[in-house]
Length: 362
Image (tube, rainbow, N blue to C red; front, side, top):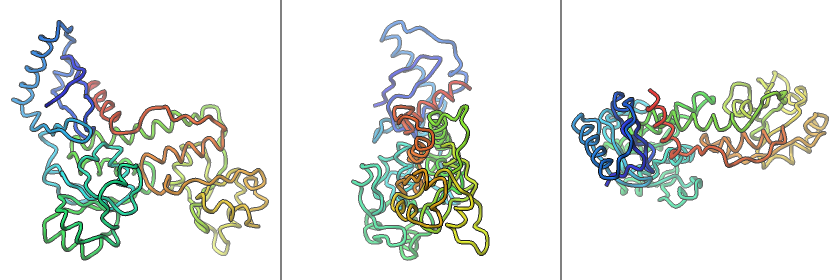
C-alpha cells in the first residue's frame, strides 16, 4: 500500500520510504499552482487522479514495500551500468564484501536489499547482524553461491575462484574503487546508489547524500575568520598523508593546512615531518605514544604543545559518512569548538527530502 503523508497538487513530498526511491512527476505538475485542501475526501480524489495520471504516463512502473518504506521504480532506472557491468533490474538480494561500501549502503537507505556482508563489516550495528560471507580476498564461496544473490559488490579484486563461480551463474559482480580525493567520493556514492536504485534515481540519491555529508561538515566546521592551522596526518608509522590525498582533503574541510608532500630522497619520514614543524599531528589512535616518544619529532610545535591527536582509523579509512566524525575531531582539536552532533542528518532519509526539494525547485 502506498502512503503519502504530505502532498498538495503543486508539490509532492516523500514520506518515510526507502530513500533510494523517489516519485517522479512531470515538471508541469510540480510547478502547478497550489490548491487548498478542502477536506479529506477531496484530497483523496486529487491523489487518486494524480497517481492514475502518472501511471498512465508510465512514470510509475511498480510499487513495493520494504526496509525504509515504499519503493517506486522509475521507468528509466534499469538497466543501469556500474563499473562497466550491466545491472538489468533492481537487485533484491545483495552481498557486499566491502566494509566501506556497506556503510554507504546504509547511508543511502538501501539496507533492505542487503543480504550478506564481509566478516569485517561492523558498522552500523545493523550491518554486523547480516549474514557474514568472508572477505573479498578470502570469501566463503560455498555460502555465497548457496545464497543465490543477484548482485555482489566488492572494492578491488575478488577471489578468482568465487569470481569464476559467479560468472558461470550469470551473477553480476561490481567493483567500486576507493576515492582518491574528496571530490571523487561523490562518484562512489553515485555508483553505489545506482547499483541499488538505477541510473536516474541512483544519480539523485547518490549526489544528494554526498552533498548533505559535505555540507554538514562545512556548516559545522565554521572557519569564518579563522587562521588555518598547520597540521600533518600520519595514518601509520612511516606513512604520511600528502597534499591532495583523500585524508588531506578531510583535513582541509576541518580547517587544517597540510604542507606534506613526498618525503625527499635520503630523508626518513620523521625527520621530514620535523622539518615541516606542524602545530598539530593527527594519527591513528594506536600510534600516538610512538609519535610522542619519537626523538625526531620531540622539538616540533605539535609534540611540545601536546597537540598529537589520535583518531579511530575506521573514520578515515572507510570512505563514507563517518568522515564527518574524523573532520569534526580534527576541527575541535584545532579550534576548541563544542561537539555538535545535532545537525543535519546525512542519512538517506534526509537525502530523499533533499532530492524532493531539488525536483520541486526545477
